[in-house]
Figure 1: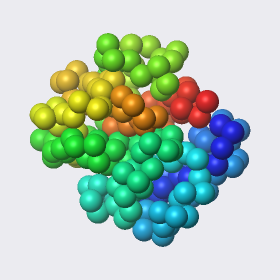
Figure 2: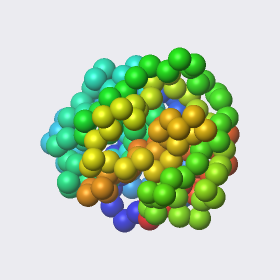
Figure 3: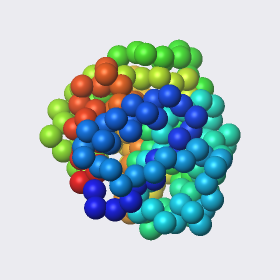
Figure 4: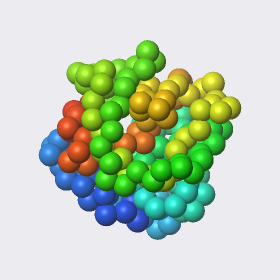
Length: 191
């Protein structure tokens, strides 16, 4: 990645697992900011945004949704877990609470026919991912400007991409040791 990366920390310890992967990919031109400790104008100094996992729901995550809406057409973005849910909500999707909480659960993720060539290049169609969430993006009234690029065995949404902007979301955690393809996915995004 040639440009400056801003990692939005949604008050989650997994943020530092992401930082380790970013550094493993030889990226050193990055900064980390808490979701309520950076302004829209300060964020404008960066070229790419990585939205970390975190507790709660997107509306409780500082200015993350504002950043997504304001810079959607201008910045490359990847949202993970809460960040993924925020991207989906910002473009009109709904999130719903799951019946079964997924904390430290390994599950199969399946790529759809709307494959995301940016994230999933050299990733098998079926792979195991680590999940840590109690909310999920709903398929009901899913917006046309987004595509579902991966699902689980129950057809829950595991990954999305924007159809016009360079914006991607992952419900699962690529930084988790459970997600064996995680490093490949992050490397693909950083290209």
